[in-house]
Length: 168
Image 1 (cartoon, rainbow, N blue to C red):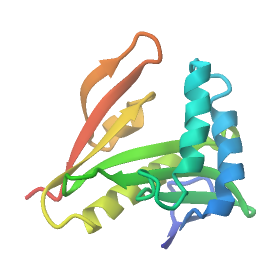
Image 2: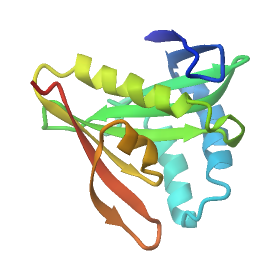
Image 3: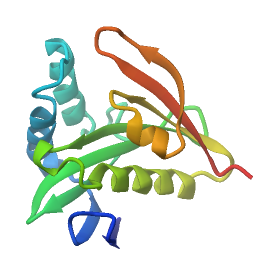
């Protein structure tokens, strides 16, 4: 899937969203590490994130039904995100891996990836459904119509949020 967005809402004049492939993993890990370098994340969680990202692309893994999208600048990934249908729950999705390199944050890239993933979920859901996320920074998701359900913390703080899709 490839989506090209031309909009005055983005700093980059042409924004191309494409599917990630396994060969993109090393660059995705570098983006993740740079984005989380100044966030207070427990060391074991950062190791888990890296392992989870690699495992997500392995055939036969429990997470191989994730779909990853990327945005590149000059052929280099600067932002990526995933969406995953939850097992045994038709129309229920989880947003995963929303990460943007610090030099490219606040340019509308993650906003575009959130919109893209929401459209993906709506297109692949035949009835009313929902999209869930555990967000460290909930502001963007609040703007997109997500409802906060609870907050985890105080260590490793994040907000669990949900948005209904395909409602009448």
